[in-house]
Image (cartoon, rainbow, N blue to C red; front, side, top):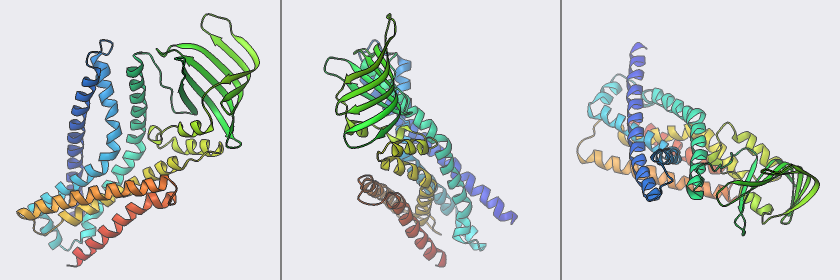
Length: 369
């Protein structure tokens, strides 16, 4: 028992060390190229500081963290297993009667904990960074360092009009009655100029969107430097319709794991589809199991009693190809789920389940050999 505890700590430490080395190496490379691209975009812009460029590049990297996370785990596992096989440590461990699944058990637990850490802590940070990056992009585009891209809570829609105005429309709650009308409460319509400076604001306790017209009730009209005007009702013409509202819902990637259930409830209560948010939520829930699947794939190709010469290179190449094939296949299945061709739960669980079944069956054959 003591031997197995020492062994578990030894191989788990190797996996974690390799994981963070690979993660920071890949993120460093991505950050370098993002910084170069950001410097290229802002070249010649005297209104953009170096600190702004650094923020822009750093916040942009969070978009790629979730994509590379499974591959980082797979590469770290491959390095760990390759080293154990190269030094004949795996042969010695197996000779003591330890089965391959007993050998993998502490690594599976460590991988699951990494997945939980990613969902519970890294994902909320990434969502905030994603939101900040969108704000910085908006400030870069509008050339206004104080421009604000509002948060993802509630319903926020940005509309650019033909006369150069920018409308920001927010509602704390909404309800869809049919395909042409929407009812909203606590509505605020803010008019900005082309430099993202506030010109006028309409605050209404109630509003309905009928066609392309907002019918506002109990309206307070606020203009800078002028007294507040109160109206019982006001018709505000816009180009926004119900379809535009559906298309402008907040991207699921900008919402943290902890906020997704409330967001899903908000959209479903309003009568809109929350399919992509459900898929995002289920994907995050299953992401620890996806990481375990990548670990098992690495074990299939790299856990061998002898790995010499060109056989190592071939196994590395094949495992990388299989990993990328699995990733792109899962994205195709995910797209089918988003478009409603297959159920949400099937689109999310099928790729991970298939990897588990294939890798487990191959490891069972290897364990019996």
